[in-house]
Length: 164
Figure 1: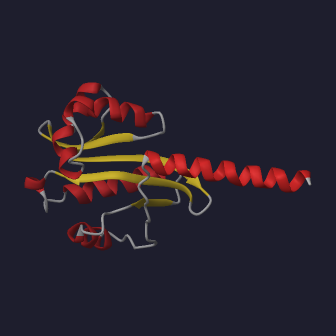
Figure 2: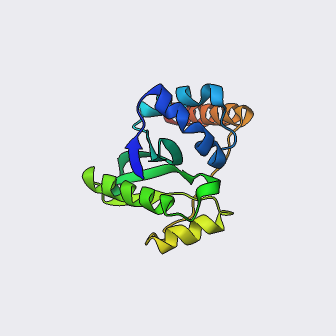
Figure 3: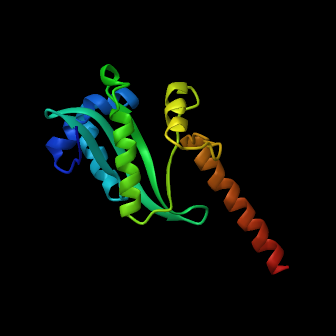
C-alpha cells in the first residue's frame, strides 16, 4: 500500500467514490472544485492506494491556535467500506501523525460523529483521547439577518448613551 498526496484534478476526482462514503452529501460534479476551494485554506487530500485503486482517503490541514498550538487537523478520514479492518485506516492515521511531525505540529486532532462507535473504538485503540465536546449551531439566513439587526440595535443604544 502506498499513501500519496493527491494534487491533480484527476487524482482528486479518483478519491470521490471513497470520500462520498463518509460525506454522502457530496456531488461528483462539484467535488474537485470544492477541494480546490478548501486548498486555499491549507486543505490537502491524501489517498491510500493498492494497485492504483483508492482504498482510503484523508483530508487534512495544518493551522495554529491558542488552545493547542500548531495542529494537524483531520477533516476527513475514510476507508472503503469493503476494505475495512485490513489496516488501511491505521496506515493512514500513522502517515498523518508522521506528517504532523514533519510539519512541526504539537497535535493531531479530528472530530468524529457521535454515532460512529466503530470509529471511536479505532481512534482510542490508536492512542487518541477524547479531549472535548464539539458544539455546532447551524445558521440559517433569517437568523443571520436577525443577529445583524440585534447588533445594530446594540450599537445604536451605545451611541445614544455615549452622546448624553
